[in-house]
Image (cartoon, rainbow over all chains, first blue to last red; front, side, top):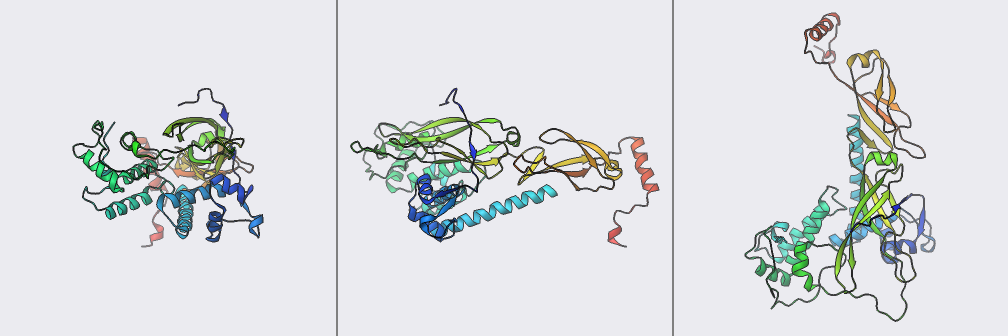
Length: 106
Length: 314
C-alpha cells in the first residue's frame, strides 16, 4: 500500500553525543533493564556514569542494543556469544573500511 | 502459489534426522543473518531458511508437509487439497509474531497459528509504541543534495481478528545533507503506534551508501581517479576535475607521479567540518596507433636516457 500524498519525513541524524537514560533505552528496544545490565557487564555496550541510577547511554547505543536483541533471538546466542559477535562484527566493519581506504589509494 | 521445497532450502535430504535439520538450519542462519551478512539478498535468504526450519524443524509440521509434498515439485503451481491437515495434531507453537512468510507458508500453515489477542478491555492501558529498525541504502549524490527518497518497508501487523498481515509501507524520507556511512537517522513517530495516550515509537534507519561510479568514500573524504596524460603529469597542467559540488580546475604540479593524491579541500562529504576530495592521478599512455605517434615514442626512446628498471641493478 502506498501512502499517496504522504508528507515528506525529515529525519534527524542520531548523534553519538546525545544521551538517554536506562529507562528510555529499555523502552526504545523493548527489553528489560536486567538485560541491558548484562550487556554492560559483558562490555557489549558502554554506560556513562558511576552508578546504575545515573547511567546514561549514547544515543547510538539503541542501534547496538537492537542488533544484540536480534542476534540473541535469531541465533539463540547467550550473552557472552552476543558480546563476542558484536565485537567481531565491529572488527569486520573496521577492516572493511580500512580495506576500502587501501583500495582507494591503489 | 508456488510449492516450496523446504528441504532444498535447508540443503538437506528428505531423510535427514531432526538433529541434522537443526544443524543445517543453525549453520545457514548464522551465515545469512542480516546483521552478520551485508550482501544483498541475505535477509531474504535468512527468512526463507527460518520459514523452512519452522516447518521441517517441527516433527508435526514436517510430517504434514511430507505427506503434502510427495507429488509436488518446487515452483509448481500449488493448491493444498481440502482438509489436507486432518489427522495431524498441532500443539500450538505457531509462527512467531512479526515475521513475514511466503504465500505458500501462509496458505498451508496459517491455520496452525495461535490467535494473538489484543490487550483486553477493562483497565486503561497505555504504552509507547515500539521503535523500529531498518537499513537504508542511499546514493552519494543524495547526501550532497539532500534529496527526498522513497523507501519501502514491510511491516507485520496484527489485524482485529488476530491475523498477521504484511503491509507494504512507503515513506518519503528527506536524506539529511551530510549524513555519513554507518550513521543512523531517526524518523520520529514512525515506529509502532502507541497504545492509549502514549505516542508512537520512532523509526531508526541505518545508512549505507550505494557504490558510486566516480567517487569512493572513506569517512568524510572522497577519492576520485583522475586520468592524466604523461606530459600533464611531468610538465604540470591545470585540468578540469569533477567534484560532487561541480567541476573545478585542479593544478597538477610538475613531476607528478602515478598514484599521487592531490587534495581539494572541503570538497568531500558536507558536514560542519566537510571532508576533502582526493584526486588520485592515473597516468594514461597515448596509443602508438599512427606513424606520428610511433615516431614520438621512437624519438623519446632515442633522446631520453631512461631506464625504468634501473633499480634492478645489472
